[in-house]
Structure formats: C-alpha cells, structure tokens
View 1 (cartoon, rainbow, N blue to C red):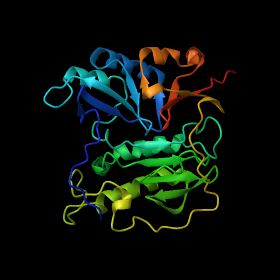
View 2: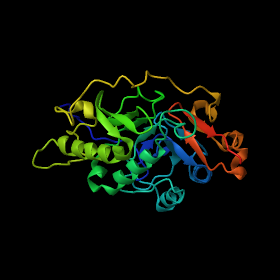
View 3: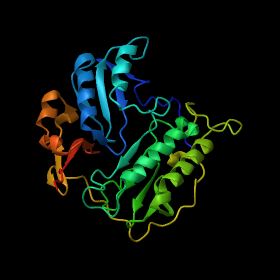
View 4: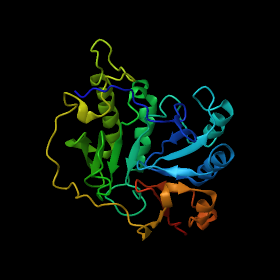
Length: 295
C-alpha cells in the first residue's frame, strides 16, 4: 500500500486553495455538463469578487480564483454567491463529485447514452455518507464506447460495449461486465469498498483525511474485485475531440483555459432562445456546444 506524508488538499468551495492572488475554488461538474445560466451566474461572481474569469480544468471542471479570504475560507457573502449558482449541490460531497464522461455522449456518436448513468452515479454518491470520505483526487471515468476518455487514468469507471452493457474499470485494469442499468449502483458499491479498504487502521474503517491513507485504487495492497482481461469490444483510445465543427455540434477552444465575459459572449450559443440550455466542458479545456435540434 502506498502511503502519504501529507493530506489531500484538492481544492473545493468549502476548502479553497490559498494562491498568491487570493483564494482558488474548484466546482465539480457531472461529466462537464454546465447549464448556460449557471455559467453566466458564476462569471458574475468572478467579476464581482475574483479576477473576472472562469477557468477550465483537465478534469472538465471549473475554477474561480482571486477570491477574498477570511480566516482561510471564503467570506460568507462570497460563499453564498457561489452556492447561488446551483453548482454546489452538496456541501458534504463537493470535493468527491469527480466524474469524467465522454462529452458528446447521448448527443452524437458513442454506443450508449451515459448521461443517465452519470446522473444516477452522482445521486447515489451524494446519498452515501461514507463516500464523503473519498479523497478529492478519486476519479470516475465513463467512456460511451467511442474511446475518447477510455485511456484516461481512473479509480473506477466503465467502457460501454453496446447500448446495454459495459465493462468495469478498476484502477489500471478491467473487471467484469455490468448492465448499464446497474452500473451506478455497482460503482458506488466499489467506491464504498475502497473507503473501507484504504483505512490505515483496521479498527477505524473509513478513515478519510488521514495522510497515511492512499488516494487511488492503484495504491491499495489488495484488489476491490477480480481483475480480468479487457473485452474484445473495448475500443482503442480515440484521442481528444478536435476543435471546430464536430458531430453533434462545435468544440470551442478556450485559450489558456480562461473564460472571460468576452469569451462567453463569443461562444456560438445564439441558439439559447431556440432551446440550447446546456454546454459541456471537455477534458481538453474546451467547450462542446451542442447543436439545437429544431422541429
């Protein structure tokens, strides 16, 4: 078992990082899915309290920086403003809602629509008090069979083999097959098993923020579930989504991963009034803008 000499300090809203220019907070998205109105609301928070920009991360999450500090935390007014965006659905689990999902799943391509799986996984994770003890670096990766995130290192995840079935990923290896209808429950069960197994003290199962506990499945000294060979249907790594027009929409590059008011206004989201309500932040520090399907 790999042990640590320092605690996990992956930032969140309630556990901000003290950077040179002020506090930095990270907001987790489920597979990068971002309501357009929430983006505008968060940008307004950044303009009023921070450095006037929203930043994209390699895990398809958001960050705001340059925020004021009060005893190592966000002032109550600022915390309230961030929470009012709707991007912090759970205070207890905000650090552990780490989900990477094929950005265009359910929109174009792929073998299965993994949006319901990701939504149910988030719901079950937030409903489990034990899973609030997951490390902030623990990551779920769900590939819909196109291979775009199949090669991303993960702790737990799956790769869709067809519209109903997927193969589980556990650390660097593969585990058994699972029906997509059962996938979220199975992944939560494995995550809870990880929380217990990672405890450095067998008399204290579920120890969360201790420096001696591993952060990742690959660091455990035992397996969570039997490891098997990858199914022949597991796709080859497909590489990042190209910028520009892509099936189902447009992938917009965000220079320096920094999105200002001008950058938001430049996004091709003129179809909002015609039904576009959601963007997708991608793991390549871009934004996938889905096409609006008109009747």
